[in-house]
Length: 229
Image (tube, rainbow, N blue to C red; front, side):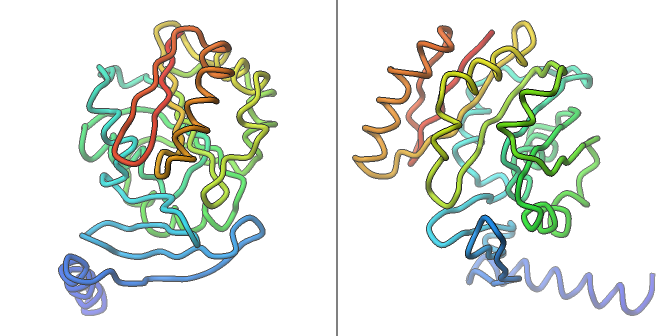
């Protein structure tokens, strides 16, 4: 080990310790799709923020962490996971490092800057096989023929999910990509009373009608819409 690598390792340990007291800004940038993208280290985890939202927070990305606790996650190493909306990669990170699952991931993300940040801060530390695809998830699901055992839909532009991802055609196509006995998780806002009303309306008028085997789970500040094939 070189002196430089020892210094870097020591620096990382110090940053991690300080992050339990103060959130440390690691990097700020912007992209075509996000006016602000900020990577912070907080409580020992990398966190990706926009102006009004948290896109990733390691195993403290509670909406998925709390949902995974309620699922009977498969142990099969051939399990195929589709992630629409990558963030820093909180979903594969927690499944690998907390649940110790050996899955194969396909991650679809439209923002190349987010892909760059994910690879820089999180993905390079994971051992799970992973394909990261820069594409519009709306178009990508129409052309793929692969089936997935777990589909995670985590698509936001700041605090909003674009309307086209709440339409019957998109949801129906995602259902077609779900393997027998597979599970689909759709992350929705539940911070304010308005968020709750909009999410519940979406669930009852569109989601549940398109995916009949669906449930709605109220989490801490979000909802998770859950459907099985």
